[in-house]
Length: 603
Ligand code: MG
Ligand code: MG
Image 1: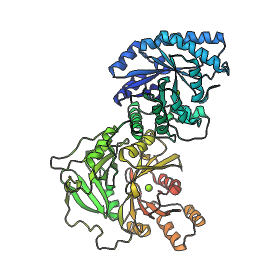
Image 2 (image 1 turned 90 degrees about the vertical axis):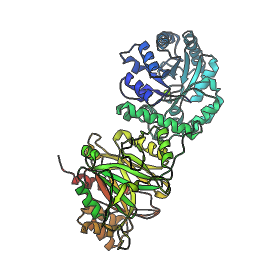
Image 3 (image 1 turned 180 degrees about the vertical axis):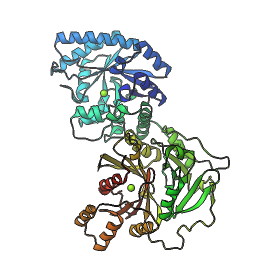
Image 4 (image 1 turned 135 degrees about the vertical axis):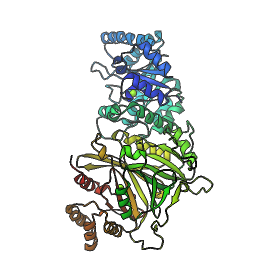
């Protein structure tokens, strides 16, 4: 189906919005009246600009407070409408949105509403315009889609149809099944928006919290199925009012928007995309750093050994067990400082994974490699993290490890030696997102990588709110914790971390410290509280207190973890997770965040 987006969903000037919509691959736009009013372009210039960008103008919106009013008021409304229909002719668009009245003058009189909408449609017809009547969830007398349809049906005018808006329908708790009773050709337009499930005033909810399909709690796919069954064949159009998008750059928002529609259409079989190839594990995490020494010191103390060096790039491989960390001192590091730049995902079909990513508008990365290096398929996540798809269990495919030359006399990587407290693998990677990319990131990782999204968790940070949502592969094979913290302009808060799994976090923490590593100290009050909440032995509690180990437990088991000091924008976590436990220590996050803030140099 054709895709469209309302200009109100994007930030910037009208020109910027149109350009962003076109670049993201939308077929059309809804022109929001205020965007036109504020634009220096004439309607003819806007029309030409859209044509140049390959965009149709699918809707002009909104016209408000038209129907079911006293005759003198309605005469004034018709006069206003005539001006707008003339404008629409200049714009070259043929459908106008009329929302149900919120005016105190509006009467609770469906017959009057139908008669006046019919007269409006008569006038519209003279200009080649169709009127799409939409029930606002907070309309004065008409607030449900079936009510709006009954008025349209009663009017029986060929230039009058209805506009369905998923937010207005689902926020009222209406049953969307009844949409199938509306003849498809009378559904003049379909606007789609999701929203988180909130208990609040519906107007405020709509104006500030709408989001793209798949990013909230509504069953948009279920609603769309009913609309398609009704026979609707117009565009799928996004109309999203959201405080975040108002401030975020239009280009990435438009891409996020279009991706949401692709995923939505795929979910109900309206389009076919390359199948997701779910990653089966983490091949490596790649750190970039201008100075390898501090990173090497932490990795060494954690028990990882430098085992190999890249043949053509300044990249070292550190590993122990299945935990592999690349340390890259190349050009990116000099630009960005120490940070987590890339993740290698084990994939049974790297080319297939890249194809799906590309179909879902993920930027495919140019290969920065020497001719003899293994070609790796890679895409960029919304936060810029590079995702490499690494062939696993496919000996015939190029393997990233082949690019690394083993270092002679590198320390052993665990075989044979005392493994108590040894690091076994990467438990999870935590990627702090730019504040305006959080919902986009979750949808990206779910749809592009086929990972499962866990519940979003909000925790208190001493200087704001910290929100986190994990995406995971089957059996926890891949765990990525996406987070967004306070102070959006402070880049330092965009810390990433690598959590390493161990079967004995007390032993691991002791080894780390004995090897010169510094653990993040936790306040004594935390342990007093732990003693109150859980029946831990004195010895256990004393060890946790001494080492700064945090503890959590749920019905599925226990979770113990501790943190290293931060290097650049990266820190490490040691994790001892019972197999059934799916959490990340959200309970403990406020204490950990406060401890990290306390460690940070004051500026
Ligand atoms: Mg709407
Ligand atoms: Mg963590």
